[in-house]
Length: 111
Length: 112
Image (cartoon, each protein chain N blue to C red):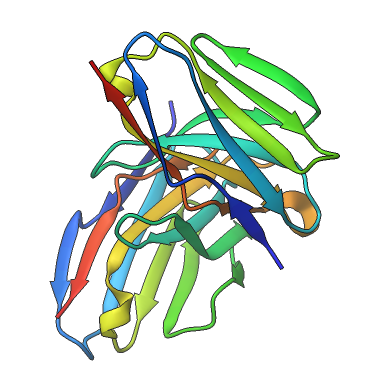
């Protein structure tokens, strides 16, 4: 069946680097996305990896290893505003029209 | 620019009552449209997706249904709400062939 595993919580200090992992088991894998969601808000798209390797966008980097069914999101120079939930999501199914989300990692950034 | 509108923002409905949530997208054509539900502190559960008018796929067999009467309009309905239908309902869209979704602001539904 389909499953995405993420640690439930991560705590880090302002200015530090944090890595949030995601392992997945799905059918017809097309790519791995990451979304950020602040309390009470809607998710916002951060990044997408279709191929193995690292993608960098400012302070955010996302990595994918298709052979290991594994990816991670790396946040550098943490800021208090980065405190939020982070979801990995797999694009799958026939034609890649479906995106299945993990349960999310809650990131707490401390001063 | 493209925008997505979802309403209402909050809704309190009694058990057994009907439901209709509406989502519209502006500034694009033939978008892929999605309905997700999120329980408190949990991930997003895909309910329905649509790649075109009258092309709707259901992911979860339950008392919800979806319709797409126009290209950029997606409606989530129920004839009789259950307590378990409470949650945060999110509509999303993406261009054809794109991989990032843009979500609406969501509807927080409480069934009492």
